[in-house]
Image (cartoon, rainbow, N blue to C red; front, side, top):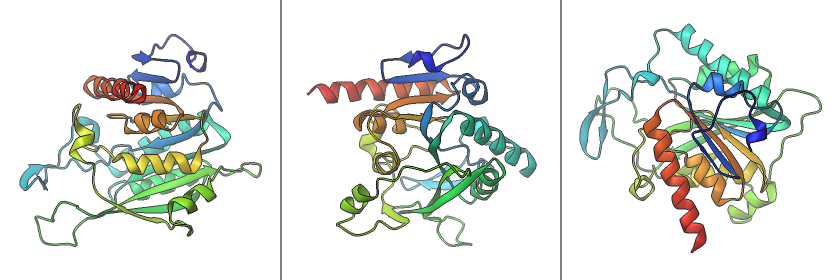
Length: 265
């Protein structure tokens, strides 16, 4: 794994199949060898920390996640998205694909940025949450979905991997549709610590199984608590995670190490 990294940047945590980096995503992405990553999953900042409120566990709480989730203008947000997507394209193999999760706060910028940076969108997945928090303002419909865009390089020779038969099998022998329904992240998956935007394991398992093979390399440039990494490890894939908050990298380490313990029993 270390041979994939150029320059003097050192991983915060490293095994034969996983590497975690604490630092600026842009800087670390520039150090990863070109055309070395088979799949990217990104859950970038949604930029919804606007001093509003939401409901969590029956209580009113702030929507603010941290300084990393704030932006001063639409143009700044779009420039940010174009920059990291451009860097991800550079590290993807010719047939590699990228999955990006988002809400109405950033997904339209993401979609435009993908096309501007040389990607072709394959699918627009709607993740329908069965237990979304209620809408406290009561001035719009309850927000109960997120969008996950799946894209490949917009090149004539690019041919993305799709494990169609496996997805069909997991869907009871029928073609899997682009609306996926399931609950929010369970408390069990937060046993080692909490991340404010942690995705459920079943979502990442499906994404990884749909578009990679065992042994492939999966990258998460905004890894948070590394649900992507835990799912990749369970499924026999390699993993690189990047985050700029040490608390979340430490949480990632605990989760990945616990997965090792589970695998031994």
